[in-house]
Length: 305
Image 1: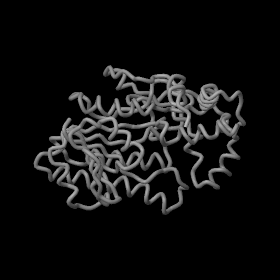
Image 2: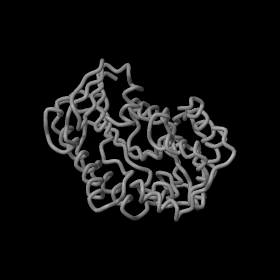
Image 3: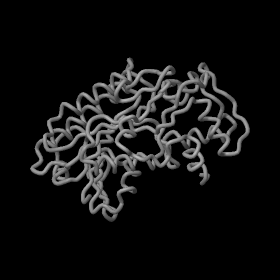
């Protein structure tokens, strides 16, 4: 690929993809921040909603990746709910208008979405074929987000949705925060520990984006999750084992509710059982670098930060 556009790409996943595609001739990050350029990576300002000079950068792109949206790690106040939804829908619509107006539109458009669109599941795994969608605020956001994406006319652009689970990486996201709990002796089960954790190693996130971009038959919805989800109690046990901590205090649901209020987040992020599997990726032959949780956790803890 010669040109990649990362919309909303100034955060963790954008930086991950920029590093992964470092050999690409040109990487453009659409950001709400200031413009800058480092080597072949260029940051271009946009507001995530309106037309502007940023649109010209989509011309002739091999890959457009949309990562834009307010972080959901916050309290779901009315103001935050509006911003969570608005930031996703408006950015997707803005990109859709730019793609439609381009003389040479991007060859592939990858839309990052969320595996939380599926219901709380402790009975069987949710895949793209038989998975059952859930209800509530987070699911409603996911539904409207995807609906907005598919509504954008792009006849000359291949479109793919990646319903992404918790991304495990050393640099940011959930993993360093969970590791801090383990270090402090607080790395026991959360809630009853039976809720499933669907996760994916950061190396496979980048690998899946590359696979989608290079596979002309890849289209539609894919679950961007590892094939080996595990219950929360098992996952926390793997982290303690890898770090060399024999035990960790559990956090019952009432304590999580109290802590979530204090640090400004929601317990849904921890207590919802996300039992999601990547049926379509497996059927298509994608080879995961880290299909199971134990090797993934050991890999990330092998260099202690």
